[in-house]
Image (cartoon, rainbow, N blue to C red; front, side, top):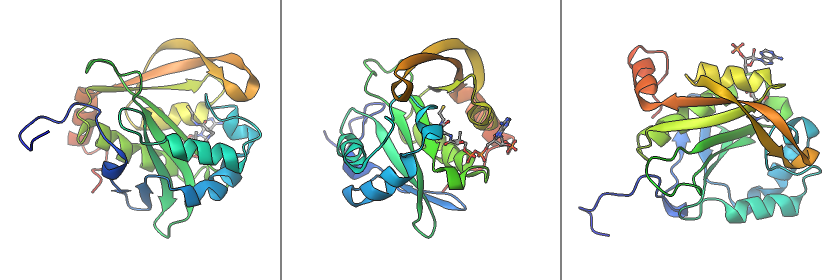
Length: 204
Ligand SMILES: CC(C)(COP(=O)(O)OP(=O)(O)OC[C@H]1O[C@@H](n2cnc3c(N)ncnc32)[C@H](O)[C@@H]1OP(=O)(O)O)[C@@H](O)C(=O)NCCC(=O)NCCS
């Protein structure tokens, strides 16, 4: 690829996952040495039962597997969510592997360790990843889903400008079953209007 060629939408590799900085957070690609910390945080049923792919119990080899698959070209963009003092508190991903055309919409996934809930960190992290998806990756829309029993996640999505689009079913690995979810979508136009109105802070 020459410098003049357009970078395909959604294209990235490990080397170009940036550090996303917000007022209180610094988000970066996970590294193998993070496995123990990730396993300790994610090994909680309250997390596993609200996301699609985290098994329960969740051990260090699960975290190592997650890290080794993260941020491969054409796969999913994964950020660890860390405080500015480098304390790892959770993770956030943009699932891109189903993208066959530029029109398909990547899906946001996220979780925080339970001690870090209720402090606005998820909303702050999502703002940064959303900005990254619309600016650096040039996506036109994002989607997300939250279990109908998960009002905190729904609220986070609403605070980030997502709009409810309907209901669906997610396969939840930790419960070995499917569960009803609310589906949400954020269009570039809404994101851009909300930023223009100052309802979303620009991240550096
Ligand atoms: C969902 C999750 C990421 C939220 O993280 P967080 O950092 O606590 O979220 P924030 O503090 O940014 O925002 C949470 C919002 O939900 C609200 N909330 C929390 N519990 C709630 C409840 N039971 N009912 C209604 N609202 C609730 C909070 O008041 C806050 O809204 P506010 O700012 O208007 O007061 C976290 O709980 C988590 O990791 N859960 C398990 C995994 C998960 O659900 N991931 C999402 C998959 S879709």
